[in-house]
Image 1 (cartoon, rainbow, N blue to C red):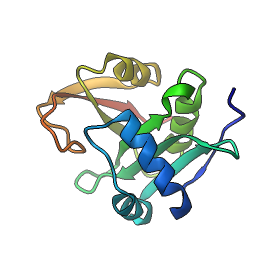
Image 2 (tube, helix red, strand yellow):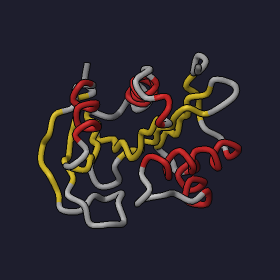
Image 3 (cartoon, helix red, strand yellow):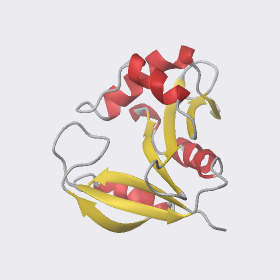
Length: 153
């Protein structure tokens, strides 16, 4: 049984555990601790974890788009497999969507074959705006759905 998870900013001490969460959720696109350190230090970004005091149950990372004003890119949102379905992903997203006051839209890329993730993001208010042959965050060739959500309330 898991405890109550709190969403907080990630620190360097979290990165080994975060790397394991990413590798378990997305084995074809792992992130090294060194790469995660660069993400952690990137300006105009937010890197959060779900922590119950004993373990990290998930992570999220988003950053303002460099090429497009007013758009924040949700690069990663992962929940440890044994903890899915408990609202941790929704809590991580709820934190991230409030961290970018200048953003008008949030965008995420999801592999077309991953219907569960597409359904999750649709339930959060995202809508498909297109698709691409290869996602910007993926080192392998993948067909991805591009989803967006308005952040103007």
